[in-house]
Length: 88
Image (cartoon, helix red, strand yellow):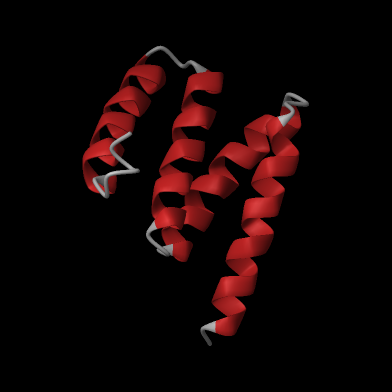
């Protein structure tokens, strides 16, 4: 909801807190989804390089575990590539 109200930074702080917890337990699924949601928050701000970094981090996990999120993340990366190409 915070993202909808333009409070992306506040939501990112909560996601980063979650990421730290998942890292401390080596919860790979939690880590991957934290990176996915961080990527989404940066994408929504048009901070495409930051978004790309987080989407790349979660994509490897999703591919290695045959997670259904692979397609969604690959589509986001294609959109980022398009935005970055258009802004050069």
